[in-house]
Image 1 (tube, rainbow, N blue to C red):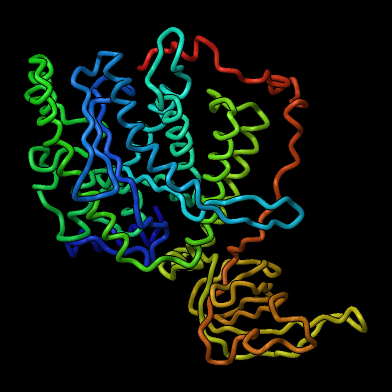
Image 2 (spheres, rainbow, N blue to C red; image 1 turned 60 degrees about the vertical axis):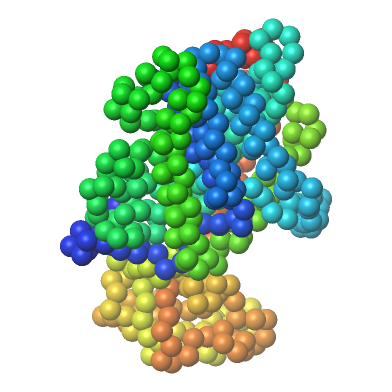
Length: 475
């Protein structure tokens, strides 16, 4: 937890209301999100009990497994879930645009992509487990499952994995996004309670928000008291209507909270970097849709050494880019880096717009800017700098002494012998510079999959789902 977030939590506790830790929204919000609230049977890793989902806040779909330990009923429930989720996902595939790429062939990218919103990280984990339990199933032969179940498993696996990708909005957890934009006066663990977190943000802490009889847990696990006193007797009775109504009482309150959370996030202006990250999401979704259309095998149980290393490298670059974009988009996020000395803000007190380096044809324009700042500057001379005010500009720290920082601009000034208008900050202008830049290292040089060294298992065999995959128990 950063110093600024800690301060915001203390202030929230003192004032009795959550404090904003962001001025803009750092996630994409779809015009038609799919809210998905799963419940699982206690003591089971991925045994579904019920789900409430839909894109219309007035008309949710309620899916219930009357006997959760009955394998056939579980897969029938998965088929019903596929009947709601798959048409929603596939409705985005038809409308595409052609994207031109430098030094690569153009490709088709969807104009929009689905967005699944779950209450908390537990909902994401359940989606991944459900995907793993269904994507290898077969619709014929021994242990057949209804049509659509294996395809549902592949999509849930994809969305669950994408949720771990920094900056992705294809599958989001409401509590995580709310906590990213507001700091409550409770612990991070308590922020996982959707009702309690929303109470802190809207009206202040409330004992009712933590009462499971008023606001049941947002899943995927149910309240132990409800399990013992309501659910178990209902399941033992075998009355489907009784079970359905009991589970409806657990899901409907969370359904209302989910839309309240979406409305709160929608009330924030979208950050400048969100659109670019959503383009990456659309590209990723398009690639997955193409893989499925080509009839490729389901995602393997585990990645090979080369694939795992490549995935890790992509996620590390995405995390670095996400951190930079959030800081550039949001002064409150940038303030955390100013406290640590990785960024500084101040007023321009002097400029030398015609400063040059080198001689003759190698002479280069390098304007100097002197900034007066009260921030601690813990950066060494020669550090590369960027600025949110001029995102295409690059600079280099020359010196920092007694509140005066001198830097030289190294790029983003145009191609002329003099700097383009507006490229050099003017005297009196307030600016911010930081060592956070998007000049990241390129992809690591990884061997071909066929050249995986023996120290990492050697070349992996081509993955083909077998009978063991298809017959694995749903646990």
